Picture: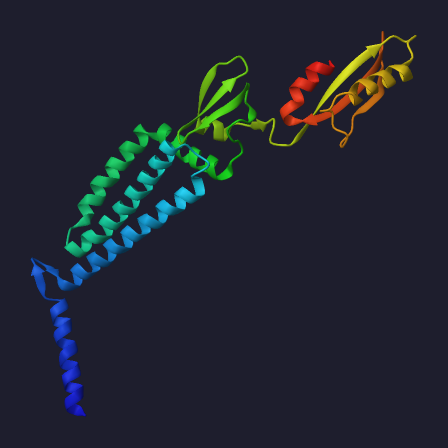
Length: 254
């Protein structure tokens, strides 16, 4: 029994010595094994990230932007893997980290707007407050979204002007999405004379609304006398319409 134990211990010792035996300078078999394992993990992780990005954002962003995002994510993983492998190849990373830190600070100052737009674009893709075709108000700008890119968003104003909005500005601005809700309301204030019949005026207005197929029944319209002004009796009209037909119905009824 002791002979068997001695043989096993001797085999283990031989394997251990072999793993620690230098094969190239100070690099041992054990170091090469860890390099291989980290390389396999890195390649596998890149493939998983690529598949996840394609499934998650394939229908949310243009192909060119998706390819850019996949490339950047892949390069980042490869960079982490390379930095993890270098110690096993007995590279001294202290000087590299110092130089890299100085370079990173310089690049950060030089490209802070680019990085801000990139990060904002990623958050917008996750949050999705707008999508292509939406009518939106961004600050004082009211337009239709044409393209959502990783660095900027392209919108078209109602007079046909195309505007590029940096994603950092878009992300930090108040965004009013005019069509995200399926229905939208518009209001009128109509003044009639004091000698006119308010009940008849309300009846006429309701009759006009009922003839419009895009005027919603639920929630239904409201027509009522709101104020007795100095020179008129003011009738308020509130009508709900599908968001896509809101503007056309508003101008038609007016």
